[in-house]
Length: 432
Image (cartoon, rainbow, N blue to C red; front, side):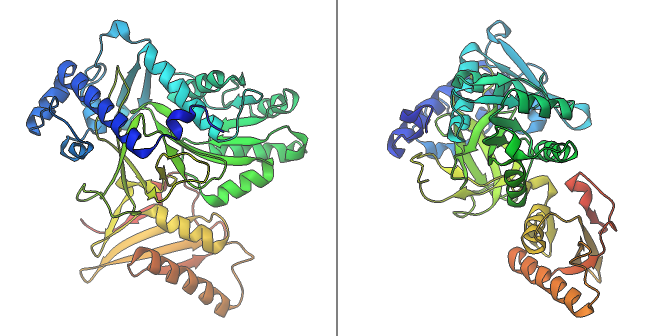
């Protein structure tokens, strides 16, 4: 099921020609209308009017969140403010915000791209879509709302408050598609249990989730408890909002809307392309944004590109779910280690999400990495031999996946303090 089949199933040769033409137009817009980019392109010795190949992308300068902050609020706009019909903003570190603008044409494109994502996830004009993202200056709520309306679906803009009321409306209004964060979906499932309801009493068929990292274990739990097909989607305000990429019903990777975005996966240290299938930082260049185009925006999100063509028929390149953040990276004995890699391995071995803590020390000028894993009472056996076997299994998997020596220590349930932020799950005692 497609929303814009001519684009979504476009032959690669035609797609790359379209990408080149749109890249040329974007560079001309930035070079002539945005002093910041005109200066950056000149410093990089790039003649934006002489780009004849997509290979030139690697010669273009990067854009960072710091660049966006430094040009707050309108310094990177490529059109006069009178042509901007919508302004969104995202919160940043140290109170800094990023301001993005949309022209009338950009709003239409955005709606179509979100409609593609929803359509690929099974939603049609016959569905009732309940959107449980906060509405406001954040791009998620309104971005998905406009996309669902563009698709022709009935939209319930419920936002994220008053969970029991959300559930009653979901039941009474016969909602068929739920749009929210995966963690909010589990909160709804918990509240339904408290209310004595189960998924079979609802009309739900689909769940379209994003805006935060989640695991396959979470997907299975959400799908089973709500009785839905749960798909992932990806977007970020700096390049548009939701609609950059999304899974189809086969759930085998997120189709990138490549006719609107050029995507690179780069080594976090060298900023050179990683080997095929390797994990790296997601870098995005917009191709159709008019008010707020960006070139080679460093998202700091980690992902990999997936090989082959999806059986669904879409020809766009697919990417993995977001695997973590490059700013979470630890370097242990010269090896880059990401907490998300450790978390994914623990989920597979323990059979679900378990609180953990990563402790890095330096002993006798050598880095050491210890992973403390909280296990359930059922898994935390009274038999020392079984505990050792579980710890060895976890350690062997982590050593194989990460390529660095790791010590695993099992602790009893509720031993570790509950921490939401993944960054605080790492304790680095080294004096670096």
